[in-house]
Structure formats: C-alpha cells, structure tokens
Length: 173
Image (cartoon, rainbow, N blue to C red):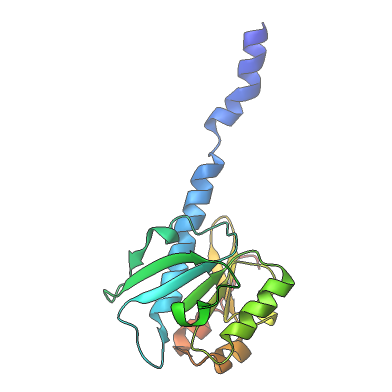
C-alpha cells in the first residue's frame, strides 16, 4: 500500500519536463539572441575575434561559455571576469552582465564609459542604468530591450533592424 502511495505521489514528477531541460532550452535561446545582437553590432575597429566577457553570476550562460562562431565565421571567445578587473575595458569587446550589486554595476559602467564595449544585462531593470541591451527571458521566448541613450554613447553602432526587433513584444505582453 505504501509503495502504491509513493508511486501515486511521484508519477507526475516522472513525466513532467525536468527543470534542467527548460534551463538548457533557455540557455540555448539566450546564446542565439546574444549572438544575433553581436552580429548586428559594428565596432570602430572590427575585431578579428570577438571577445565576450561574462561578469557576475549568471543564470543563462551555460551554452554561451562553450565559445562559438558567429554566422559570419568570426570566432567568439568567451571568458569570465570580475566586475572590477583592471583591464576589463581593453580585454572585452562585449560584456554579458549577470547579478552585480549596484556599487559593482556603477564601477563597471564607469570603467566602460567612453570605450566601444557592447553591454548586455541578463535581466532586471538595468536598461535604465547603462546597459545597451537587457534580456527578458521567459519559458518560451527570449526578448530584449534597448537603452538608446547607452547605445548612442557606446561608440558601437547597432543596425536599425535590431532596434526594431526590440520593439516587438512577446504574445500576451
């Protein structure tokens, strides 16, 4: 009887989609969106290989940290750096920003000011605090917002098509 009760309790869990599968799906979706954003960005001096730095703890970079190649064939080299790394502005063409304190975030953006570094924040309200792009990750879709003021000051040119994509809303938003 106890075995039947346990089986009855745990059977729905056995058939539910494991959280790891959803997390993997989100990570792959975030990678696609990040690579898409990077492919429509132009730096004053185009790097032969794009250096993407991940700063702070993140939720969706498992797929991204493996490194990859853009559709153009340009390699994307991914590394993790601390927010206060002294060479972050010269070691990175783009930064993917995870969870940082407001003080860490402020110091990071002070360091990046005036440098052609594209910044993408994983979530939250960072688009009002300096990031060029802010990801919005949902179960079925990854979208993003653009901080036009930060884009204008960054020195990185963003193709207008990407700016238009940011205006699209997920169904039900």
